[in-house]
Length: 151
Image 1 (spheres, rainbow, N blue to C red):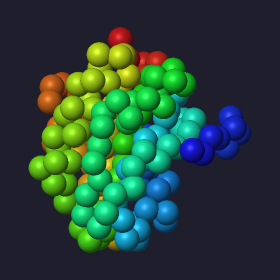
Image 2: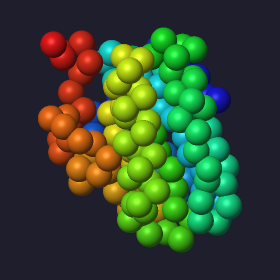
Image 3: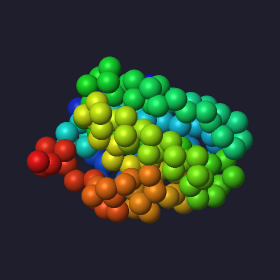
Image 4: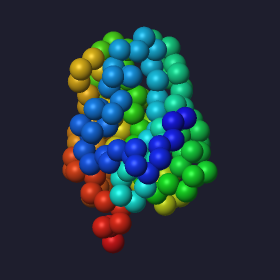
C-alpha cells in the first residue's frame, strides 16, 4: 500500500491521468497485477493498494478484496487498474465481467467505481470510455467529475 500526504496527492480527472500515474510501474510487468486507487471527494489519490499478483495472463479477483481498502478507509471513489503482460490492453470478457461485479457491489456500499483501466505497453484502455461493464447513465464519460458535485 502506498499512502499519500495531502501535499503529495495527485488529482485524477481522466483515464489518461491513471495511465500516467501507473504506467511506469505497471506497463512492463511480466505478471498481471491489479491495483485499486482510493480517491477522496476531490478525486485526489489517497492511497494505492495492490490487490492481486497473478500469472502471465490472469489474476483471480474477489470483489470483497478489491473493495476492502475503500471500506476500511471510508473512501467514496475508487479506480481499479490492472496490466496485461502481453502488452495489449484490450479488455478480456473476464475484465468486463469483474468490472460489472465490482461496480454493482460498490454501489451497494455507496462507493463509486469511476473506471477500470487496463494498462499495456505504452497504451491503455478505459472500460468506462468503451462502455464495458459500466451499464447505465454513468458510462461513456472520460471525465470523472467530482464526487462533491454529484447530486
